[in-house]
Image 1 (cartoon, rainbow, N blue to C red):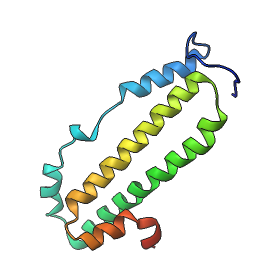
Image 2: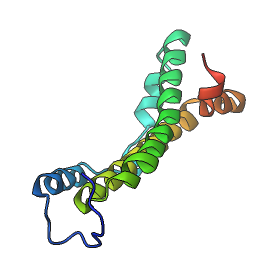
Image 3: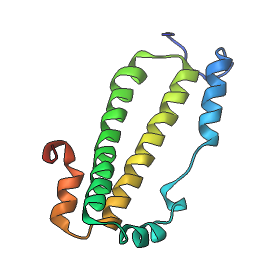
Length: 128
């Protein structure tokens, strides 16, 4: 799937890939569309073990999104030069960044203690 020397997206040569990219765009959302208000109220109804679990799941995903983007950028985007596929990969990278932002915003909203936040934001090093 490597194509050298292609500069323009058009004419579309890989319609199947282009169609997947266009579907990907239709699923676009932003963190600003999400209200955490009810989540905060619901979080308070959980016991400490359940809160711990939720926080650590968020920490896992907040940290793993960066690794996913690194892999997409360093491997796929570098090696795949088909314009339609690069559009899809770019959209996927944007989605991963949005996910990372959303997980981070959830940690910011749910965790009041700064030390705990710092541990969660650096969970790759801090959580076993």
